[in-house]
Length: 334
Image (cartoon, rainbow, N blue to C red; front, side, top):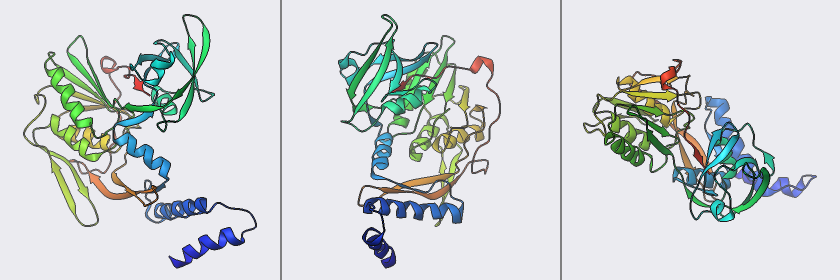
């Protein structure tokens, strides 16, 4: 440790080029975490800068810096599907139907709605220029907007005419389980006959929210076993559910369904509660914890492995989606 501090003094003092001491520190921290990957084949432990740490904390808190729009994919491109009243985009004069063509001067054609939303998001108080094409007048407009604090909408749902409820979970933030419980309650009051649970592109998030969400569907059975250096912890479902256990459930997954999303999907499948369709999931198989350091940076450290009821540490799904279950994604907020 003393030698590392000495090296951090020597390099700026004697190296032939000027160097930034803070950058050296970040590089040393990054190298330390990358050595874990080399030695222990750990794909997920990494060093997180202060700015990245702030963004991650915002995401799991269910809030982010954005402009207050909901975007959706159409044949004409990604359009503004909804404006949140009082937020920056609405105040600046953006209109529903505007086709977003650029963010910060960069063309965004070809991006998914989620990728586009992430381009628009940023630190509260910073500015972003969003370029749009207004179909009614065929003119291109540019809006310079100051990002404000926006509440995330990671739980979205709707009822189809045939009584099938469509429930999309985009990430497991602090409000996810409560949002799922509320959605299931409202679906139940609308003559619910079945549920499509969409976990495609869900990167995970807070494991406790995945456990609570699974417990809303299951009245018994193992959800997941979590193993650390010091022992194992078993998480099982309780007797109370949000919807009757005879309501059929289909879960949609893909290669970007990971972590907490795999725990939820795996628990429902292993207990015979749901059928999974889609493509092979990411197969993360571990729990990481974000440990914040004194300067605001953090270590994203693998602290546990998780095992599903079937015993596997990750999931494999290759069943194609039947035609009658295919559904378009819900819009993304930014």
